Amino acid sequence: MQSLLFYTGATWMPAQLVESGGLSEATAGTALSIFHVIGIAGTLLVPSMLRISGDARIIGAGIGAGWFLFFAGLQTVPELGPLLMVLGGLVQGAGIGLSLTLIAMRPVDLTFGRQLSGMVQGVGYAISATGPVLVGVIHEATRSGWWGTGMLLLCSSVMAAAAWQAGRSTPLGPEPCPDA
Image (cartoon, rainbow, N blue to C red; front, side):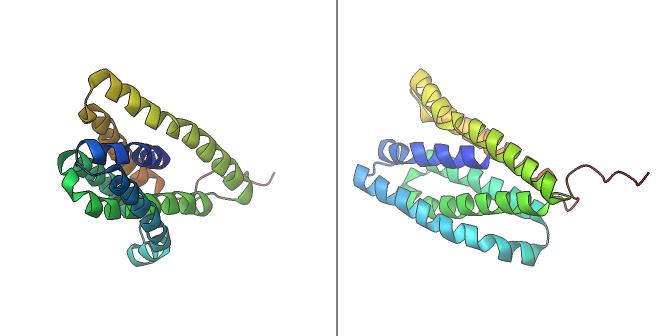
């Protein structure tokens, strides 16, 4: 979900800021740049957030909630676009940082870690690629940004719920076979 939200947001946010927020294309492009640059800070905050909270579930659910607020804000108060870009940048950076950290931390061993990484990233990026297209199809069919935003709000909620499960401290993978 993280990458779907990121790719879809990065693809559609400038147009939404122009259409709904009344920004110029140049200003909307600048807002997108802010979103990307602030994302670096979000990524770098993940280790500190994990150290302070000690619970990846809370951080992951918070990131999902941040995505929800970001997309809801873009749809309902687009004039807050610059502030929302800071929020969106932080959650997109923290989201990818936490996702990759959990892939590295949770497996029981290196072999399972490689398999998990390949599966999560392969399947995840395949699903992610559909996000911008689906929002475009929805926008074209309804002539409204509300339905596409609804899809993104649903995906944000799914991400928060999935993060609660993925952030558990229990190692992932098969249990070792007992010696015969």
